[in-house]
Length: 333
Image (cartoon, rainbow, N blue to C red; front, side):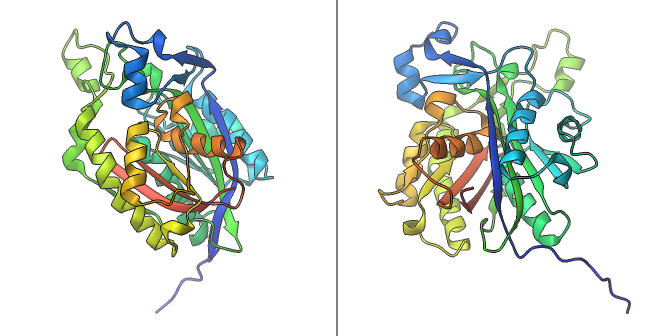
C-alpha cells in the first residue's frame, strides 16, 4: 500500500499576539433607558453594565476587525504575509456571502491565506482558538489569525427589554503559532440545539422576503432561561477544560469568561470553585456584551490594567446562541 509523506506540524501552540478595537462611542445606561422604560439602577443591578462601546454608523465590523488584527500581528512580531489562515467569528457581518474573513484577509494584506467565517455567536472566539490550535499542530498552517468581531448595534431594537441594552461593538484578535511548550490546552466544546430558540433573531430573512411588512430582524433572548443555562451548565464545561489541560483550579490565575452578565460571571466562579486569588475579568462593566469579541477584549483589559501578566494561566469559556459553548486553558501572551 502506498503511503503519504505528510508534513507534521508543531507539537505545541500558543498565543503570539493580541489586539483589540472597541467601538468609538461610550454609551451610558441613561441613553438607553427611555425606550425600555427602565433605569440606570435596574440595568446595573441586573447585568453589572454601566456603559457599553458602540461604533459609529460608518464603522463596519470589518473596520473593527482590521484594527484589532493589525495590532495582534504587530504584537506577534509578524507581517500580514506571515498569516496562513484567517478565522473570523461573527454573527453581524451583513452579507450571507461572501464571508467576512476573505474581505479581512485582503484588507490587511494576508492574501492568499485561507479564510473562513465561524457563526458560533458568543462562543465563536473559543471555537476559533480550538481550530487555530489544530491547524498549527496538524501542519496546515504556521500562523493563524483568529478574530472575534461584532457590530451588535446594527441588529438591536432599542425597545427590546431582553437584550438590546446589553450589547456593544468591538473586535478582538490573536495570532496563534508554534511553541516550545504547551500554551493552549485542549478545547472542550459542544452544543445543545434543544435550546436554540432561547437566543436568536425576531424573524428570518425569508420572513422578510415573503411577508411584506415584516420588521427588519433584530436580536432577542429568553433572559431567565439563558441565565440559568449559562450560570449552572457551563461550570462543568470549565472544569473539564481545566482537567483536560492537566491542571487544577488552584493553578488557574485568571478567569476570562464570555462577558454576558456580571451575575452570570459571579455564579460561574462559585460553581467552578475558583480560589480567591483568581483574577476575574469583568470588562462588561465598561464595554457591554460584545459577543464573539468579549473574551479577547476582557483579556486585553486585565493585561492593560496590570491585574494579569504575560505567562499567566487563564481559563476562558464562551457560550451563547445555538446553544453552543467552548472552553480552553491558555497561557496569556
